[in-house]
Length: 184
Image (cartoon, rainbow, N blue to C red; front, top):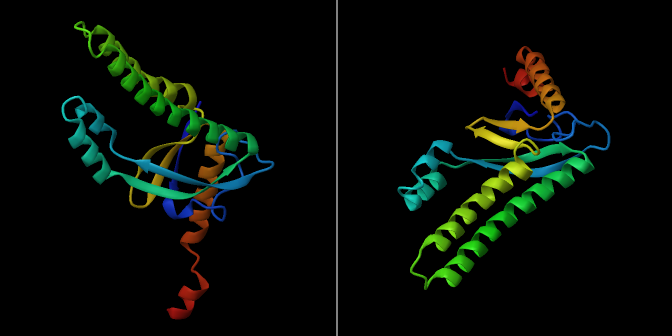
């Protein structure tokens, strides 16, 4: 079961996050690896059947990005890499099905085979998402100007990270940085 965690974008680093794998929850053999996330409002997908190109342009304009480092065990990092690869390959499969379907069935008067090919091409990335991504790797739920909300596969990692970030905020509210004290 996955759990959500809200992390300030400027704290996506090994200096601000605890050493707990975001996928497995392990605390041994942790290394911080570079990650990039992108998010756009999901309500845009409702309009894809009506104006796909316009939706694509709006999605590009509204996309928010975040990058940093996250803690992974070797097993967790391998799962992250494998999921990205398989999900990417599903899009190549989509292109292959579309090109193959159009090439093979273009001259037929019955449009059913092309319709089936298009349906399979659309379903392939959806099935890949649910098979290798959802609940198995960190997924971005939202990015705003200051925070990133991630859904982590490890509830223990989400709890540990949230507690770590919360304790740091409580400590730092009344504490001034030495340089700030000098300038005051």
